[in-house]
Amino acid sequence: MENFDLIVVGSGPGGYIAAQRAGDLGKKVLLVEKEHLGGVCTNKGCIPTKALLNSAKMYRHALDSEKMGVTAKEVTYDLASAMSWKQDTIETLRGGIAFLMKSAGVTVVNGEATFIDKNRIDVAGKTYSATNIIVATGSSPLVPPIEGSTLEHVVTSDEVLEIKKIPSSIVIIGGGVIGIEFASYFSSIGTKVTVVELLDEILPMMDKDFAKLMRREMKNVDFNLGCKVTKITDDGVIFVDPKGNEQSVAGELVLLSVGRKANLKGVEKLNLETAKGYIVVDENLKTNVDNVWAIGDVNGKSLLAHSASRMAEVVVANLYSSEKQKMRYFAIPWALYGMPEAAGCGLTEQEAIKQNREILVGTTQMRANGRFLAEHGKRASGLCKVVVDKKSKAILGIHLIGPYSSEIIASASVIIESELRIKEVKELIFPHPSVAEILKDTLFAIEKTL
Ligand SMILES: Cc1cc2nc3c(=O)[nH]c(=O)nc-3n(C[C@H](O)[C@H](O)[C@H](O)COP(=O)(O)OP(=O)(O)OC[C@H]3O[C@@H](n4cnc5c(N)ncnc54)[C@H](O)[C@@H]3O)c2cc1C
Image (cartoon, rainbow, N blue to C red; front, top):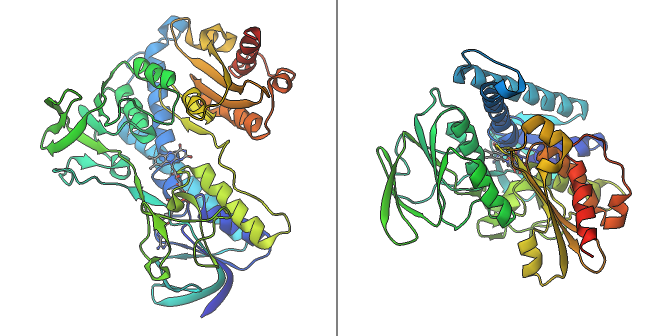
């Protein structure tokens, strides 16, 4: 039996970062992965979706660029080429992660880990032991118990990334980030898209004004809000609308994007405490077993790749370095890479009001921004909303809808995490022309109201 300082189970952005960081600190580390290095993020999530979304964006740009002086004749979208671009990207990144593991001296074993006890795991009949273990087994698509959900034309985000033919129509059940990204993708490549969402608005983490604008901008998508799907049939979906009427919508393909569930197979022996299906962890990401940590999607705290990686850094720093760190959740940015793009960090206006905070709110149209106008024209829509604490003037939330949002939000998270106030951000210099300048403009707009 080989003994390690640390065993990491699962090689997503939580697991491989944990393994790399601990390896770099000179620890003897084993990383176990039953599928491919990189986990959901690299193979079935963040990366493949962005590769496909970008191809669809380019297709749309090619179709729409005549007014800017570019005429492309016979523009077509070839799914097979887009899929092979996506696959090539995945494989390059997988190779990059393998290289990182090698450089950090991490031993990688391919196979399913099953816990024997709190210090030992079994992989394909071989036993490995470690003083500390990190569970980073991630999550999988949730398949709701709806009649018809196992029919052949019903897919989750895993299978939809492998389709061979562009469907003429798709019904997407669930209007969260994953559902809306796929709605953007398919509607851009010519598929008729219908979204059926149980709640009365899509994208529950988003500012309500923004969610409305998002729907308005996704002109080719038919949204059915407050609707409960009751059955999936051979050619579509049956749902009950808010008035209690039964409706049906046709779909060659049906995508289930109603949430995720933690991957707990293999960890049963540990008797880890769970809540709502996710492993319970304390503020240090430790489970109820004293040498076992759980990071990333599997603990359900924040189902984002960058959150998983940050949790990995926190656990490894606290285990093996003198620098004690804390996982903070307030300034975790999220981004939606649809058409349009959107991103947010910190409190939305609605959340701040719910918390009875006294706030100032500023909203600016992106049309007023030079770069946005130059690249998208005066008919395009985009917004920036900033939420500020009325008394301290600290920035509590930044929300964007429009191009580059996913890039600008990185600076927004620095602003919020550092608890910067209006005055401090106003004194920063932003490059011109950049869409990011909208942040400063919005702060000046807020100041004007004082
Ligand atoms: C379609 C889609 C798009 C997404 N887009 C984004 C995005 O743009 N940005 C973003 O931040 N997040 C995005 N996410 C979420 C992101 O992918 C996850 O938050 C992230 O991958 C979680 O990382 P993780 O390390 O917790 O686990 P995962 O990435 O889920 O990896 C866990 C790994 O553990 C392995 N494993 C499980 N059990 C065992 C076992 N017993 N033995 C060995 N190996 C095991 C699995 O095979 C898997 O490879 C997206 C998700 C999906 C589905």
